[in-house]
Image (cartoon, rainbow, N blue to C red; front, top):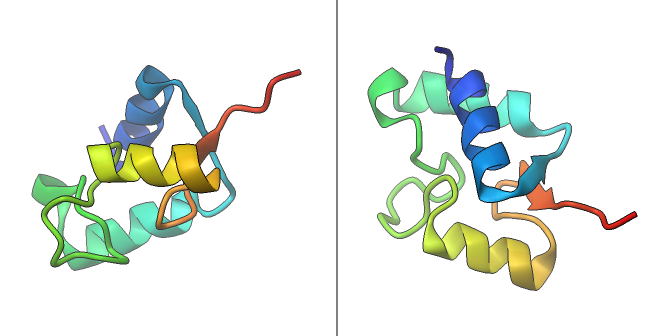
Length: 78
């Protein structure tokens, strides 16, 4: 499973949706960290509390509408 596929699956399980930025973030994760550390945040890679769908990520989404990397967001209510 690719990093992008893992990110999409993780996002769906958490009840969020992705932005157009998700592919760019997946590419950055692969280049910076490799497959083994795919959850790490390429925008804040030294912060162990910020990674895909972490408590910090969820807090950002809930408070700001999108995560720090601008790849996950709240689902719009129709």
